[in-house]
Image (cartoon, rainbow, N blue to C red; front, side):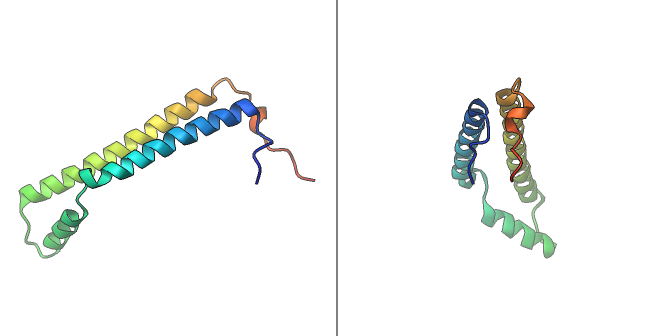
Length: 101
């Protein structure tokens, strides 16, 4: 499928947004192992099911998950701002796909 029907300036803006988000996602994924300990989360879930957990350890794991969720939300907010900024003042007609015959 071709994107030739999109105005060149608007397509450039879409491309820059995609590239920035793609780079941001790659960094987030790369750093996820430093932020999250999947095994630790699994262990605390098992401990909770067995009603044999340490409250402090649970607090650490929950805080870690909350921070990760906050980071993702911040990334999405930043993406929304970049999209809005990059596409502001561009006529809507430049993104309307022509009708197929």
